[in-house]
Image (cartoon, rainbow, N blue to C red; front, side, top):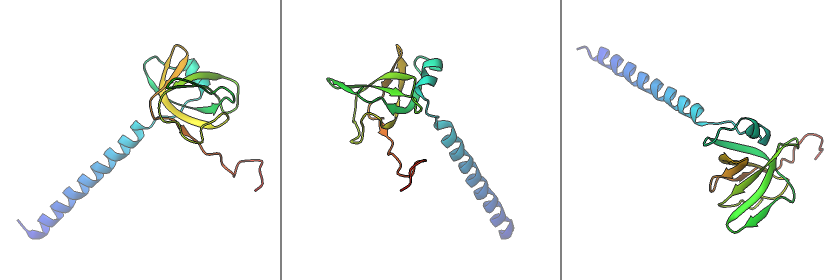
Length: 133
């Protein structure tokens, strides 16, 4: 076989493999991601046994410790609907009432049960609308 033809075949095979790997990476990235849901969405449409990402604001003065469990309520960002949350695991230092969080877990008996070590607090932005700094 001609050496130029061998190089062309190798190039086509290598490029095809690279394209297939890129497509697999993009597919995996999009299929693994899930959109975080507000408390009102979870209360109206959560299916038992399914895992969700909960996002919202911790209701001020709702945080209590009961043994190893941390109990608090999370409300929609705009206020209104809130759900009770039970969480066991590492608690980030900036966690407190009024802070936005993201937590992975499941709905059980109208409560959100957080998975261990999935609690993340969102840092408040100093560049929010309506503030001049």
